[in-house]
Image (cartoon, rainbow, N blue to C red; front, top):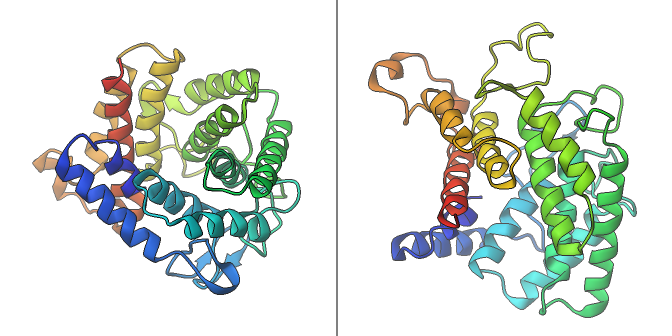
Length: 305
């Protein structure tokens, strides 16, 4: 995510150097052996739906790392082909992309991350045509799987399994961004799904300019005041995206930024920094990188206007 964010500021030599350095560091972490071509976290993970160890790759880490490497040209031809092969052989179930090689649950944001990455790889000239064709077919199937699961109100549940029916802000943002990206690469018409999804997102996952963590926030005990740095950062990025696509009025991203600034410790006014800061608020993975991604995405969108 950091390499991608820095690459958006590539007209600056300093930011270009940062992007290239991060790309090289990320490429060096690409796995070999059984899970060749993919990426993992350096820690074990326990989620609501399953567990996976640090030795196992996952689609989220793979997608963010792959995008950063592709955006900065850090992968060799072998690295690109290894990524494409690993994506298909380890993470594609035949109908959608799974979160890990041993997890069969359909998680929509993860599935569409895989679809968008597969579609991007399919369009590269350094990917052999038979492999590119397989990537394209997998991406199309995965897009279809998630579109079929969209609810009548335009929302997507987190996943397609018992206990995974909740709807939250940052995962919905990921779904919309990756669905749009995959469809653009594949030439698919997903306008109806995108319009319904965006309408739900901006009406149900904001209270004015304040991002909600869950749709219907406040209806569940303990969620009314829940704030999360990743959710806030994703909301800022989505606000700029929504302005650019005409889903929200001009200036909405500025309003969202004003609403979330105080929840990022290094951005908050000095007086508010005296509050106790949770470790997650300072996490590079969960707070700093998503915020950098959001701010550079806003910059990129507005630079094109």
